[in-house]
Amino acid sequence: MMTSFGLYFATRFSLKEQVQIIALTLFIGAFMSIAFSLGNPKLAVHGIAGIGTEAQNHQGSWKGVYGHKNSFGSMMVLTFLTFWTLPKETSKLYRWLGLMLAVILLQLSRSVTAMVISVFLILIMLFYKQFRWRGKLSVIFLDIGIIFLGCLGLIVFSYWVEIVTGLGKDPTITGRTHIWGVALNRFMERPLLGYGRGAFWAPNSRYAIEAGNAIGPGGWIPPHAHNGLIDLALDVGLIGVLIFLVCYFKTFTEALKRAYANNNTENIWPLGYLIFMTMNNVTENCLLYLTNVYWVLFITVVFTLNNTKYMIK
Image (cartoon, rainbow, N blue to C red; front, side, top):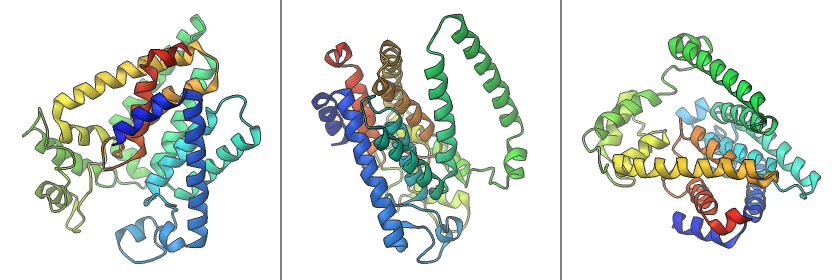
């Protein structure tokens, strides 16, 4: 159903219309999150009602109408990106209102993952906007950027535990590395076709219980692997992952062409969304998990950029 709706959305509306509709939808979601968080904080703010691990760890963090602070933060990053890429003729008041609202709510979510993604996404998009392959200058800056990120990555990977512990954080990324270890070990038992969509983390699944026990004797059972690519591999195996990656990189190439070929801001949206989706799936599952807007938007981007009629526009 998600794929079918993505196909309809891509063929029914132009890219400009898509961005406008997505922005309006996310704006409504942000407004409703404010209303619920202020009007009924027991439902929309972590730790206001009840006790438990979640209440202790996330107390005071807004989750709005999205159920969890990380989901809420992720949607606010997407809101910021969408309002940033609205068509030029869009009202400046509306654009800036959406951008400011997204930034404020992102802070209230206290989602570190979403904040990190937003910083990197903004830097990448600003770099693209400033240096759109303008001859040798772009090549120089690109090379410098790659060298800098390579050195930074080497330092982070070499001293990961020391850096994270020094910041007062858990080097296992809140137990995610334990979950990934169990998931990857079990994946090797069915590498080609996986376990079927949602089967690995189904209610009372022995695999999910095993992953929960790997974190600690707390009785918590993870609902997914907290990594989109790992979950995709568990669902559809290496064959499905390969098909997805071919589709993704082909679409990413088309997104680059579309962004470079036109100065209209909405043409940056597909590229920005694909980058956002990649980063967002490192520590969360935002691909085929249950019913979600991320897969709908991915399918929309894929069909839009690979449809010759829209490429001509």
